[in-house]
Image 1: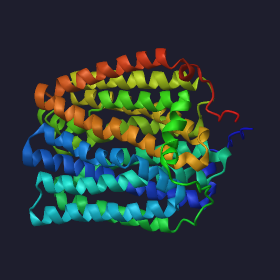
Image 2 (image 1 turned 135 degrees about the vertical axis):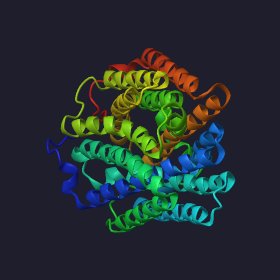
Image 3 (image 1 turned 90 degrees about the horizontal axis):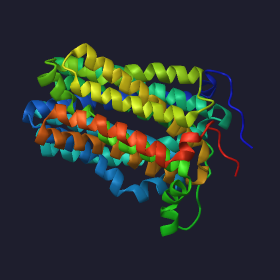
Length: 411
């Protein structure tokens, strides 16, 4: 029997472990945004090659893909809190390495890519652990509230991080990496302060069937499969983040601060929707809401690609962020509530690869297309592709389209 959601708008924060978890994720996300803006701008400054901007995403995604059968199993069999803490420490070490290259004047593409591979490995292990740890820190009735606030945390960092990253990089790259390093260190400390939560671990023998349990669950649950794959292909085609240094410098003629504004704009739209969802969770027509959100994401991408006015570009990016937040909320709630805890790590490992494919691999898609046909056509084609995916998935996954509430099904 499903447990009704709590009506307390701040229910998740009544649990001290979740509060520390929330702050840790916020600091880490803030640092990642600063690093992303700084590395992207610094790379384009050094090379003027859109392909390198795409490779930044590819090298961060590959570890998640190659380690997919390992990372989820680790999250299901070992202490998720400790995995998260270790990953935060490794992330801080990567920030320190980027800082060292910058100070030494040795910022070269392949050295940076090597660091980003380590960063990708860290994120590959941290993703399933973090996504699976959250539901262990709050009771089920507060879980939807926690997911909404988690999204708010990420989106707030997505607003403030790029702006601060752009401003700090405008001073110098060293300042940006120092701040990111400090924030990741604070995030690690907060995770170590979380008491070890109860966790239903998997004690079965590690064999092929065990490793593939996440895939098996997702492909057997068509609603979850539809939600994950819809987000994958929509963002894979519609992602334009990797090309923002080009738009900021060459299309809209803005500086590093302008890149910060462009990177922050999707978060601004998303945070309003995330806060709204925290106070007014989706209770009915969840499937329709997800498809509408993805459709508006594609429309916003198309407008951004065609725009040559900064105000219109920023507005389009805000629409993209607001629309994507609806999709993220539905997808993450479905995964959290519909997945048994003993396979949650493996399911989230698969989900993280799908998310990574949509984001980092989407950046590679955008960078490669921009290299051959230009940044504007690459974004416009992606927006049209996202709209097409929305229609195809709405027809092909009727069960997802017709889903009403996000409550877990009876098992």
